[in-house]
Image (cartoon, rainbow, N blue to C red; front, top):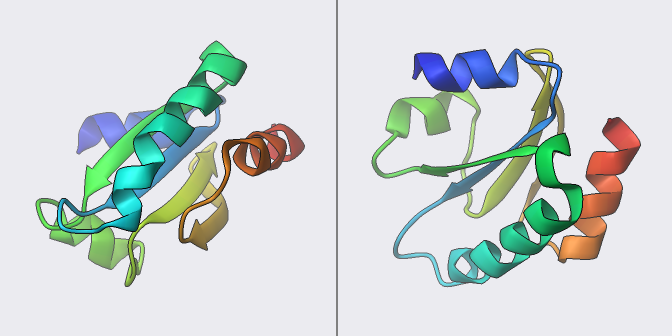
Length: 98
């Protein structure tokens, strides 16, 4: 978990995808996240957190539904949204916060 804390405290925005293996909509996120990474390259870190394996993290960030996406920068949560989000919308959101 220290790695997670180090990452979200950095200058580079971190997109966190809280997901669960059993969640249907969550299965739609990997290609979207790959597109975001391809477009933004090293301007963003992307982390996936399985809420079933990391219940403390899910509870800490009050994640009640999956998928929930959050963007952190310099240790602060700048944005969050639940549900599947198209890549172009995510890219715009990240760029607006950078």
